Length: 125
Image (cartoon, rainbow, N blue to C red; front, side):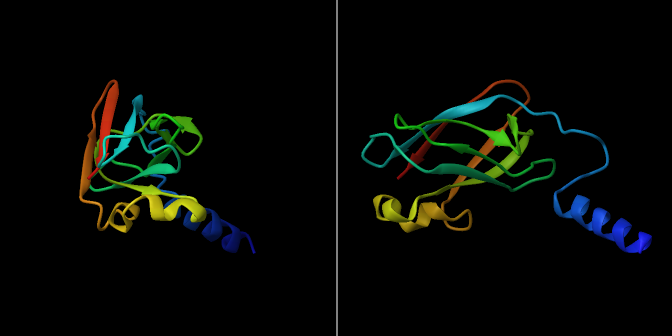
C-alpha cells in the first residue's frame, strides 16, 4: 500500500511539471489583447503553452479593457522561455474571436518571456 501511495505522489509531481529543483523563478508579465480591428478583447483568458525548454504553462484572465496579468498556478508571473499563445473564451462568446486563435496549434502567436518585466502586446489578426 505504501508503494502505491509513493507511485501516486510521483505521478502527480511528474504530471504537474515538478522538476525537483524547487519553485521556478517567475517574471512579472502583463499586457493587452486586441482584435484585428484594434479594439481590445474584453473577455476570456490568455493561455501560454510551452514551446521551449524551461517554460511552464501559464495564463491570465483578460479584463474588459483587454489587459491581463499572467499567473503560473496560483503565483503571479511566468517562467522565462518561449510560448505559443491562444485565448480561451466563454461558450456564449466564442463567436467573437476567429477559431484559429482558440488553440495553441493554430494561433500562430509566439511570445517569449524574458528575465525581468514583460509587457506583451497580443494582436488577434
